[in-house]
Length: 413
Image (cartoon, rainbow, N blue to C red; front, side, top):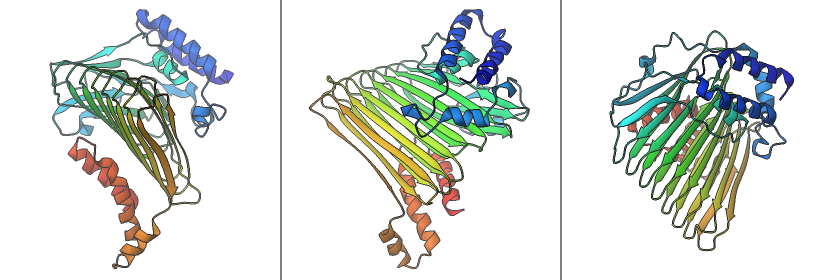
């Protein structure tokens, strides 16, 4: 790291040091040292070749000006979905149990800290700076109400460096539904360094839906790590509409037989928004299944990156794995870098991957215009139909309606 960034991060850590439990302090210091040694990734890092986070953060963000306030004039409940469920509140990366509402006595939501290992600079910074992380542990044979997780960021008084950290454990035969949503106020830059770890035990299921509709001064790196035991099922739905920088890292480890993993995403971006989705599925045991479909529509100066990896290990015979990335580019100034990848060490598998980048289908456009539909309306109808396939796996009907409205507003105006 640049010496100025190192000094700023160290100064921030010293400001917070007295608030951390003594039992976690040594591990936090080790994480900070790791982060300083490894720097933010740039173009020389293959995984961040098209998303040079170091350049973006150094240009847009100053750790010296970060605020650490845990208070805000947010009226949190005003932003809650008016639905029955568990409503969990984070403010500037800190879990607030008093403002949260837990309905189910058979699940545990608590503040926690654990000595986790460091995978990269963002992981290390999250461990060093996370304050009141959250552990959700769902008991065996439990079909819960939904978990609504709200991330509030208040940058009215200065820049915010938020490090939310969540661990989710789904015990055998549980069914978990999670919705994540971010709300911000203020005009100073916000850097969100989010980490979510999920462990699904035998026959557990989880469906996690994320809406990423940020202001252009919000920058996010999101690391989601999933470990699946036998016969578990993981589903992810991510919808990205705007923000200065959005980087989503999704890593799935199928550790038992008959695991299922589903990944669906839509990035519908314009302006100078930059969205980067990196996914990896590690098939290690027989009879596993994964299905991945990410779609993108880009306009103006928007930039998108998709890098999807599928690994099929020698023991993972009878694996079925499918991956696709489909894009429509509406502007000569917009750009998409896509790289689907397969690495297979087993011989009895069914695997496929592919990507497409193009413009609106001229035949479809001609078909609609021949039936009296205006050019702009015909384009919007084609793009809406292209986008809404990604909504099929959302478990919340009212969220489908909300995202459908965001899609139509973006495409129709």
